[in-house]
Image (tube, rainbow, N blue to C red; front, side):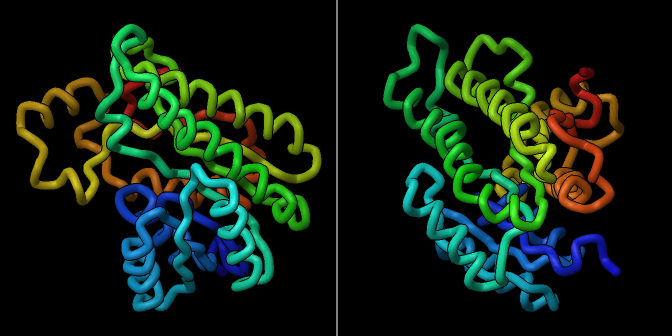
Length: 252
């Protein structure tokens, strides 16, 4: 039996990159996957690829910053597959991240948008998924970042949102752990996604590799493998943790 047979797992932000790789890995491990993304075409494409490979997947449009949209995503999972065993919250707004700055120059619009997606949106996913997770015992995996701990001189919105996300994760683990719900966060290093491949200058590649303790850079599948483990019974005694998957770039 595969590790995730008979599990229903939603991946929010699954249209590309880490989310798409994770959706594929979870399906390969036997899960029925809700492929959720604000980009409906990307979600459909990822779901279609999973089905073509023999897996179970359904695409759903989900704007993580919109309460009604998140609620509808959870309802869609229950309607399609009868329940929900796990949710991987991976959504981000790359435009906001690229427009971030320090505490003096970041626009309040960018700060608020980052919080809406990276913190409030993750709270919404937690709030709407929790009633279903409590019925069956379940797992939440959030995508965090080393930026929460590094004290970066820039990207204040991003760093604050990820620090808040880690506090949310620990709250969830503390509040509902005794009822069978686990919550953990993954802090990925810079991974080579399909979007970056071919657009990553060699000098930046070498500089990124130099800060790791690994002979190679990471790929989306490295993160997907950790999510799959945390969603499975192999991760049954892991709760309330931030797990770095970064080639040893940061020691905790």
